[in-house]
Image 1 (cartoon, rainbow, N blue to C red):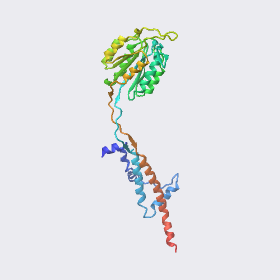
Image 2 (tube, rainbow, N blue to C red; image 1 turned 135 degrees about the vertical axis):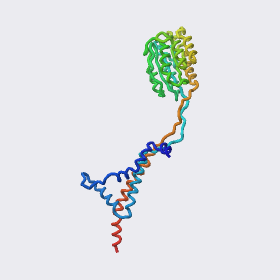
Image 3 (cartoon, rainbow, N blue to C red; image 1 turned 90 degrees about the horizontal axis):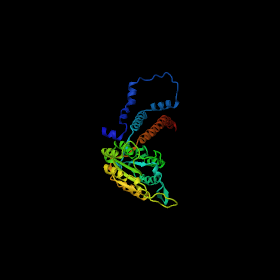
Image 4 (cartoon, rainbow, N blue to C red; image 1 turned 90 degrees about the vertical axis):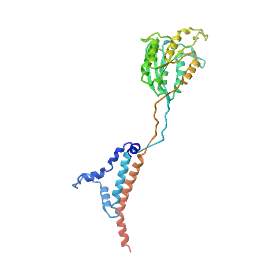
Length: 340
């Protein structure tokens, strides 16, 4: 019985208020009629109507108790629970670390045959990647000479996307602090479940700033079970002059160091020379094995208090009409008896 009350009502303890009118009538002294400051005529008429005639003397008190019981029932907040539904059980905690150093302004990427900067290409591809991460917690970390957590882990994909689109080259300094970016990511991910700690780090350069060396940062990531997927961003060609492309030195990307970081932490290294390859890399990220979340089944709730509340209101109106008609009916009966 107790289990049913707690499951069917939000506030089952309000059932104790059911005998409250009876207790007040029994315990409180009667109020002497010494005059009132405010007199409401129709209340006196209702009281007179209730007292008149033996046929109607028992019904109004019973109706009043019924109205009070319905009000108590409504105050207990009855609810109806639907069938349990399982929430999405797949999801990961993905922290995106995006390089915004000065070299990300190089216009060696193309979108629709139009030359764009590396950061612009990242915004286009990663923005689409974020749209597909339904059920994942996402965070955004920007790094240049320093590393900053712009968006903590959240289910609000639009907020993460908006922060990425608002980012600008050089906003965190012109140099590149890869080690500090990994260290900050590890600090933010260490409180998450171990199988969900994933960092995707995108950079187009080598570590030239920061207090933490990338190798030491990778060791810290491995110790905290953070998998780091590294992406080397940059074309093998430079912008050129009058549309003519000149070869550039791709060694500006520390591919050996990025591969070592991924290998040390159990992740993978990817090379993105154009937007097509970058999109393919994030498509591969979509196929990462999902980590299960400890989510309990959800049961939809439907509030039912409005029904007993409406019934109490209608019964109160009916009782008022009944009392008034009970007062007038004897007069009509007398007139009928004296009519020949």
